[in-house]
Length: 170
Image (spheres, one colour):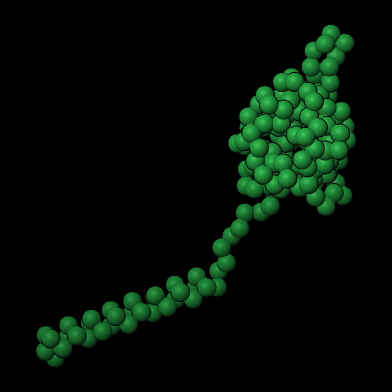
């Protein structure tokens, strides 16, 4: 066998081997499914942080446990309960949606939260702190975005900027 013929045979064999490996890898990639991250585990109890003024006039946060068991949408249920428990939310305020997006919790409220807000900077801070402290009970949530009717707003009562996601407070 001539040298040229031997090189051709060797190159042909190498080509067939490369093609077989490529086909095998392609089949393997089609048959295996990418692993998706499991949904975040929601604890059976989340603490609601309800602001109140104590007898000395200092702002405190009462921690009230809330069971997330049997809740089809635990994020929404927790913050709807916080609305019911916290008297500083303006009259008529409703939670329209609570949605987790990676490490952020997006809370969408009705327009009454801004239209009917009557407090000063302390009340605004207490309301925002109640939301961000309560959100800290959900593992992996690092920030909270507050929306009004699906849109970002600069402030609730003119004192604190909420146009960007806010860090949760442990």
